[in-house]
Image (tube, rainbow, N blue to C red; front, side):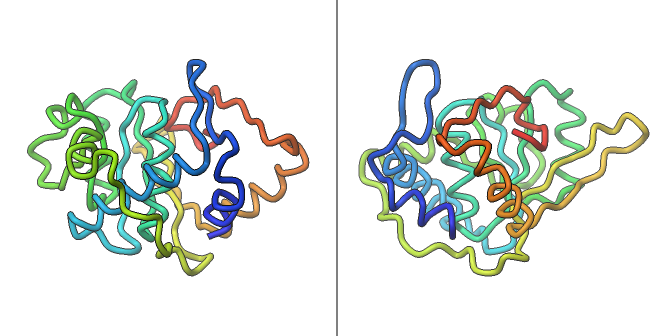
Length: 193
């Protein structure tokens, strides 16, 4: 909820810079609402976990915000992981849906989990996105995301991070990032992404 309020307050400010292109907070909210609606159309409900496997681009962040907006938590997957490990993590996590591109649909087919591609979102909404309505994020103890350990000492394990944990981190980092710019160089599957 805090994120959405900040975004709404600064609709015209730049939220993301990627490869020299810029996305405003307003555009981010617009695209996030498309992803949230796409999840809703697949009957993904509050507290469900959504696996996201997208490249480090605008839609990665928009799908993360849209997932939270839908009241769900996300699990970021890196395509640098071996395919068998990706499938293992998705199944072990109990993900209710997967968001990815068409290539990932082929990789993860046969798991029996609804798959939403960025193309599906584009075809459903195009430039006509649902209005960013009320968020389903209500309780700070709701899950925000799950990160999997590297598995170097055995089986990979999921670590659950609540919205309260994420908000505490963001508030502590605010003085460091007071100017509002953050460089993200980590792999998307890493907790500090």
